[in-house]
Length: 279
Image (cartoon, rainbow, N blue to C red; front, side, top):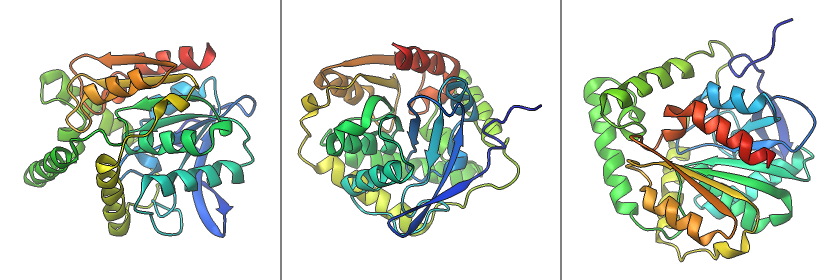
């Protein structure tokens, strides 16, 4: 008997208010599920298999395409509040009354919206490569992203080589390994992100950066905040600020790593997440 892994788990759908949401689930059926909320312009195939498989060894993992993303129907909303509402609707449509959240980058912003809008749903939360709403630096992020896309076009590579990993020998190695892992799934891959989804997500990120800060003191659930010390997208100072404002948070900053620190240090990250969810 072969054990199912992320590269071969089937894609399923659930109806959420008349819209079909695509998702994949892996791991034991019992216990509190861990809902994965993915990054800007990402679909299901952009989750690192080592992170999913590692956490699914002990917890049920559910990763989904939010409204308008990948194979899910509808259009992506232009605010993270609405993305949070859609995530809450998906979680409830799946029949879950209590979940843990793992949000990376934009997904970390959406996770905060879920915790603020439906606190009873959330048991624990992992916020990776993300910061608080109203954190600032939004214009800088846009410039960095544009620069990375130009470099990627010239080198015929994925912009995440430049956005997620430092341009050091170790960073370049980590990037190469990450993309090899992303390519492990050969069949039944997700649909690519649409132009509408890209534009709406960028609009939502910009609006969040320019918003008034949220009162994070009302999020009393345990939160694990993690980032790299060289994150070009969300400076680690934003993660540290968020961890200070959350009353029950712990913070890990991984050395010599960027926005994709949790992928570069996937062994360490998975071990820390399993410890965090167990205690």
